[in-house]
Image (cartoon, rainbow, N blue to C red; front, side, top):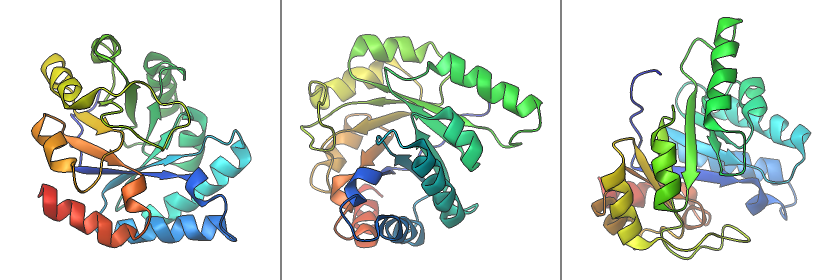
Length: 220
């Protein structure tokens, strides 16, 4: 595996569902992404749970155009979309393709003329057992959550709380992302509990550039 990934303090997640009711959803999504890039985001994830693979790929390619070389683009769930969009990696859930299979696909792609840069793999975990299993795998970072109650998922897993973050930190030396209900009001205590990075969705929506800068000011 390539050298250890240095995670930014803030890991924005751009969820296509948050823009689905807009008159011009793609335009709004790209403006949102551009605001994050201009405010200094060095990595974000694109999530699209619609099962519309054509749209997911099309929008991912547009996001790649916005990020250029300035910001890493991670694709949620879809290894195929990651490769086809020229993204920087994939984030996998517990019910997705296994990290081992994803790593094999990425290695094969590199051997046959794929990206020359390292493709990263992150994995979601929701309890200590899942995290320990992920720690044994060739993944670049592990996400733990939900830390707090969240409305970003229809059927969220049980809240792990700050104690869950502390236990996760004690169980792995891999980069650790905390996710779920994280806001400007509580992000500092999540980092203090041991997370390297906080994933944020909802608290960036209203004014992404301003909110991102405020997160940066809080977390340093």
